[in-house]
Amino acid sequence: MTGRLAGKTALISGASSGLGRSAALAMAREGAAVIVGARREDKLADVVREIEAGGGTANAIMLDVTDREGVADAFRQIEDMTETLDILVNSAGVGRAVPFLETNKEDFEWHFDVNVKGLWRVSRDFSRLAIGRGHGGSIINIASMLALGVHPGQSLYCATKGAVLQMTRAMALELQAKGIRANCVCPGYFKTEMTEEFAASAQGQAYVKRTPAKRFAEPNELDGAIIYLASDDASFTTGTHISVDGGQGVRIV
Image: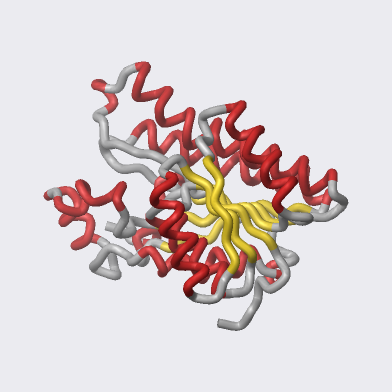
């Protein structure tokens, strides 16, 4: 590791598992002081212990992105915890395959409450804190390759991730003048808790056969894109996305 994030403080939502957990570990290895947030406090404690065992600095906060008052309280804790907050990784997200004709109000609200409203809420509070303290920052939103294309049974997930991509672009346009960059990463299918059922299904195996890389990705294979967008190397990069999908996005047939 090169210490590309030395002196910076990063907040990662959804950090108790999967892509968020991997991002937190990678950022700590690159020298960032890491604040990990999620609902599962026992899992967060494990992440903090692993970071500290590797010589890094980490703190954990309870963060349910669907809870407006809870998010506000988390940012009050962060204000007391650190003088700066430079990086936000919005990794909290949910998804479930539901055929369109079988979707209902509960499915709709569940997807949008976490993937869109939660991301909006945390990004807004991060931006207000950074601007209020007179410094800029970098927002990295975890979207999906399904922000750019669609799969059967994923209408609600696709809609939310498309919203994330467009919100990121709009945020970048407005926040650039305040010194805050906003970008997306659009991962394909990675080996996480959320994709275990899909990976074991016939549809998942068919996906692997169609993907140029012929496999699911490991969580740490997204870290490079996140570290780049968080670092000063990306000082002129905002309002865009990086696809990390094993070539699925360029497949013709």
